[in-house]
Length: 600
Image 1 (tube, rainbow, N blue to C red):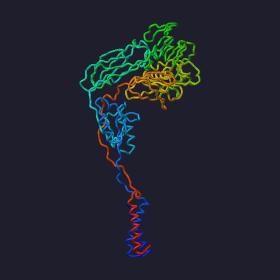
Image 2 (image 1 turned 120 degrees about the horizontal axis):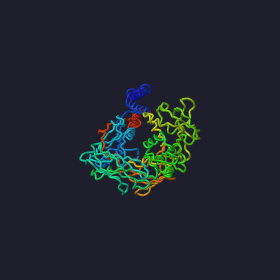
Image 3 (image 1 turned 30 degrees about the vertical axis):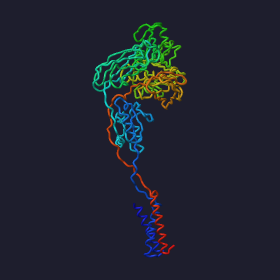
Image 4 (image 1 turned 30 degrees about the horizontal axis):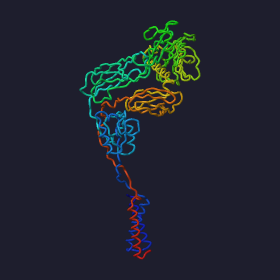
């Protein structure tokens, strides 16, 4: 404003100086003087390009539409919410990490925070249209949520019985039983006190049990399924409720994929048995998801099962060792590994085959570059019970060291636990005896021992499996709306891998693109699929009808309108067309007035 007044006063002063001092026209000059002052004022404003603030035009809102499965569950109001959202603004879907727009609610999660933060950064009004059952409500910045509008379409509640969890082994040996832990939960009122749970594989009925529902938490039950009716290979078990009578059938069944193998996944051979083998066998059974079978040799030719001490023939032991995924050899059991196709071999030489053993108190220290080093992070390993003897060995080329030993905390460090990879086989050697005392002592030393056993077994089993190829699914069964995630297990850096899915709708091809962490995602509709990777590798995955989104949840948002704010805007003088007209008219008026005065 002050700039405009200054320009007008300067234009008036210059016009008056011209007509009154230079041309000396006198009182007759007031008409051309005013016209020139107006014209020069308009020109000055255009040159300065004076601007002023104005009320901006309201922007079209961004409407974040909840596309999670909860909106399309029984009692959901998806159609009503979608039609209303289309009238309120530009629709963008949210729910999970997928960046596509949805015409149906198929997303397996209700994540609002990433979408809301991104929409708020656009500067446009934001309206959230949801049923209110948001998974990450606590992670949403309160100021952004307060500025945004929330319009709720809560689902109509109904009673429901649901199988919310099924856990069990993913791999068993032929003849072993399959223990399945099942959790059945009740939501709402008017539901029965007991319900039947049945387990089937295809059209084959395997087990049936009654479970009593104990209030809101539901009922837990363990169902032991015999594997005698299952052939070797992959089997998709369906755990389903009997006639529950509730309106949401998709929560009444769950899937569990189990692989039946002719021999155990982990075979432990100890000859002879000692305290290290006893504690290692027990820990392997606790931490490994694969079936573990152990054999001990009490004399030169007699093998017995470590589970029940029943006699086992030498040929049966040799056959199990040849087919194991992970082979653990303690003492003089090494010759049994000949011809084994195991992906990992864990060797514990303890002097039975003539190795030199140096007794003493060997205190251990963790290495830094070992793939199992995470098991020792933050643990005072040097204060744990020492090993009682050590077999001095030379490190093969390319080996890493997980634990080093020092006699009496003095002298040089010697490798006590080390490993390497030879082709597609991974090997770990434990040259120290007495590590069982870590587990026997309890406390942090026991937990470190268990973590080390689990990490070592996991690394040994991470070698290339010809049946699985260069990648394998992290979880072979996922809930509806969740991706099947593959992890890279090839020895080379991750690279795109072609995959062919075969399901009820036929075969379809795709490509797995792995990220920097060696993982790739595949989004599939509910069903059973056989996959085949380019370059070798087959398996089975399944996507359930079940999703946690289908179970009635807590409404974590409250409805409120967005703050009505008009965007700030400015209007510049060069955008004012009338100002150009004023300038032209003023100059024309001055010319006419000067002609009447006889001036040029």
